[in-house]
Image (cartoon, rainbow, N blue to C red; front, top):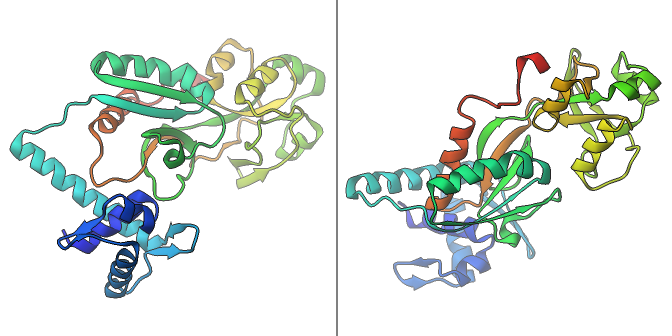
Length: 306
């Protein structure tokens, strides 16, 4: 592959030109300085006739053209590596450390059991799973993989979509008996709503198209699990993922509210990881395993609940 493309991939993987130089980005002439890397990047941009990376003194951000080229180059390098492995038979054995970050509730309820099955298949992998409802920077935290529940993956991270994340409005029968059942989205203004920090506003899809609902949560918390318990306890109405509340909906402990409205249909559960010329064997093994876990769809997405 063109050496300038290799340098472009190295810069993106490192996060900056200076970091790429420190990490040993090189050419046939040897290691390159930050100034040389910058000139090579500028030469590539001039040759292609597009800006690939917006550069400031503090950070760099891929342009849309840069994101497109980066995605295509990664696919090419991965295909080349896989072709070489098939020819030589040198398949990497998944082993060694694997650091994962995931949201607290999903990690505890669904990811941990799936990872137990994963480790049974790959006992030589040393797993570290950290759960947090806060946004976690993969590069800064030195994580190999993150499970994200979002409609859009940030930056230049590579994403593997696992399954759609359906979210429904729900409340307890006790709350609805006391406060009444809203008939329209506007009726929510007369009700208590519950959301953790960062979960408002709610992006919704319904009979009139897309809508955004914003209100102050009746309880302030940084924990999504606290919100679920408050909804179950009759404190208000919340927008919750089916993976989180499907058992409560099935038992009648929660009831759907405004069933014609759901959370934005673009949201999905995805595995994301920093770009690299070749996906590490432990990461690829995790991707393959988790895609197998959801090969037949989400187990909580039951027809009787929707």
